[in-house]
Image 1 (cartoon, rainbow, N blue to C red):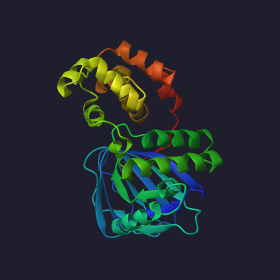
Image 2 (image 1 turned 180 degrees about the horizontal axis):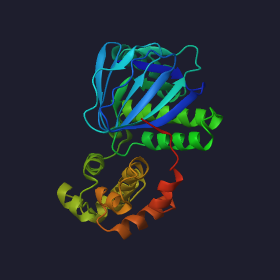
Image 3 (image 1 turned 135 degrees about the horizontal axis):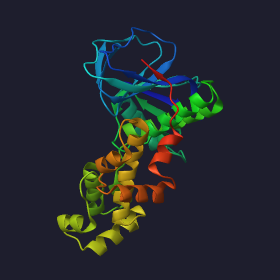
Image 4 (image 1 turned 60 degrees about the vertical axis):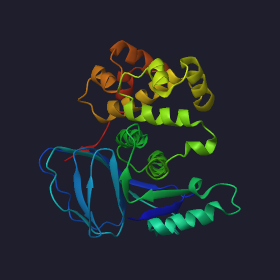
Amino acid sequence: MLYLVSDVKYPLHYLSSGNLANNNRFIHPDRNLDSHVLIIVRKGTLHINQAGINYDIGPNQFIILFAGQHHYGYKPSEEPLSYYWTHFTIRDPDYKFYSPSSLKRNLEIWNAGPMQTPFTMTNYILPEYGSLPEDNRSSLFFVQLLDTAKRENYAATYRCHYILSFLLLELGTEAFFTPDLTRHNIPAAVVNIIEWIRLYYNQPLTVRGLSEMFGYNPTYLSNLFKKYTGYPLINYINRTRIAVSKNLLTNDITLKVCTIGKLCGFQDEKLFMKVFKKIEGITPTQYRDMFSHKHINK
């Protein structure tokens, strides 16, 4: 496991991107490239070896194939496979690779220094592989990158460079840095309920039900949530569900809008559409259509 660290003042250089979709025992080609490759798997499992180590990358997991590292598919996928991919290079002449232990030691040194801005905000910190949360934003930015690239005839434009750069910043944050809410003096009850919502957003959650489960008055709990998150409890639940639905809308065109609503905890399709439009300003169908352009390869 390696971590690539690069200064954010150097935007990443986009080369190409696409969405691989294969239903017939896909096996990744044997290669050694002079560019880096980011892969985020949407369906199935990609079996790939990098630098002598086998990785099994499943849904909402990713791998970065580093430039100069030998990689190949060590066995075929046994089910339909779909993943996003993008090739890129790094302009920072001083970017480095770290092991987990050396990165931890250096983070402790950097963050304890006299710097005004934390090291983690001034650098891309990219794990070789990892998992993303169900409501991850990285996949949404990947869809935006694919859509922009196709609209611009796959030219390496500045828009693609900067979308890619933001995508990798977000991926590093989601995969490597788990927010410690207790550091911000957020009550344990709010932290516990946030985690519960993250795990069970697709269940019939209600303010009253959560209040009874965690032993609080419903009005008090909702106000407490608003104080520390900016949203009343029911709004926070809905925003979590809508974040997941956005990933499904852009990443699985085979699912109907009503089905996506149910998968995200909305049993009433009209309520799903109403809440989505209130939060995003457009309907679920309009959101899906905004990012309908992708380069698909086999």
